[in-house]
Length: 167
Image 1 (spheres, rainbow, N blue to C red):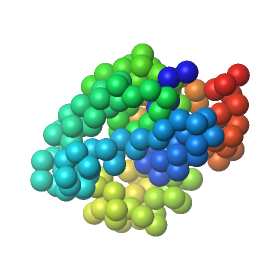
Image 2 (cartoon, one colour):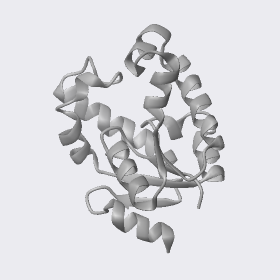
Image 3 (tube, rainbow, N blue to C red):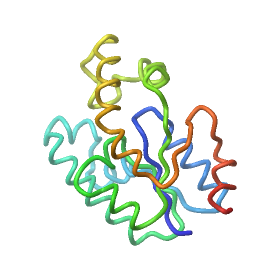
């Protein structure tokens, strides 16, 4: 096994799950958003605000492709990472991909408390949040379902996935 890319909608637990999985496997962990922020010297929200989503997606793609140099890493991606350029195809060619699947109702529960911290959600109210999650999840599902492993985010543990990956 080499690198493992954790994908899924924002709020699905990619960073938490990825860090746990890395620990169990004895891998290193990289959060792609954190890497982008460190390299850019500003937050994802600032990049979105000052440079726009298109510029962010290019920076994100460059950061993703830099992970090719890593070995034995679990990499948690941004919620939109698989959906732009050839990112999902690239991840499938360069490691194992895992999609943490959650239904929109569960994502709403998770995101309704911390939506002000997320650039795509900062200016929307609860009703708009429901609509955004529903619409965006459907648009992104095509990409997410290209993952090599799809797990139920409410049932699967990092331990069980580690066993599945080793087996």
